[in-house]
Length: 215
Image (cartoon, rainbow, N blue to C red; front, side):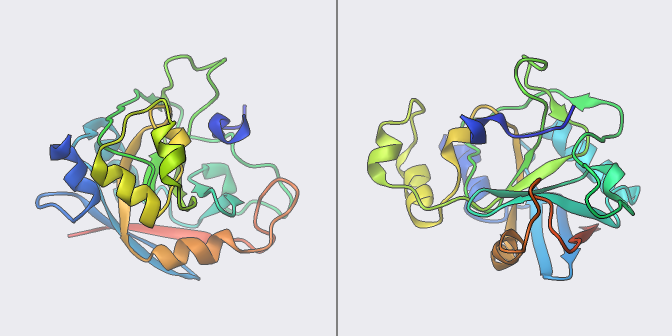
């Protein structure tokens, strides 16, 4: 079954992790033909942090594709089947053969640049467990104060300001695990999100990635 974001279809302490690069965090860089995206993993989500770091160090993501791209929403990758995939080949169902338990944290939101775990839908995955390897990076849009006030989630002032000025996808909060963020190279997200796609939202020209841990 294809891994996807179902929501697209229908405090203070940890929040600092999304405002500045903390000390003692795992840092990474995603290399693409559109530029580099540098970021770090949250210590507040240790299972996802350790799993992502392990896969990166194993070279798991090297030459994989951003196989699903939706402008104004997100760019998704991490399917091992995408490596050397033929043009038009359906992608999005692959993984390392395991899932990661959800690690929801209300302080970690889906702002632009958020690194989050893709997963199967609620009907087959009521525990909202994350894919073992597939992830997405949020592009999103700037949010109005009224939409945030009307949200069933309660955001603090800093979170509301982030969504209003930077943008994101608040309707995903609490449904998908946010486990890191892009701190440099947000423009690369925009460039990838703007590429030409086919009917399955796969870029017509492959967008390959290489991910490395930064010491």
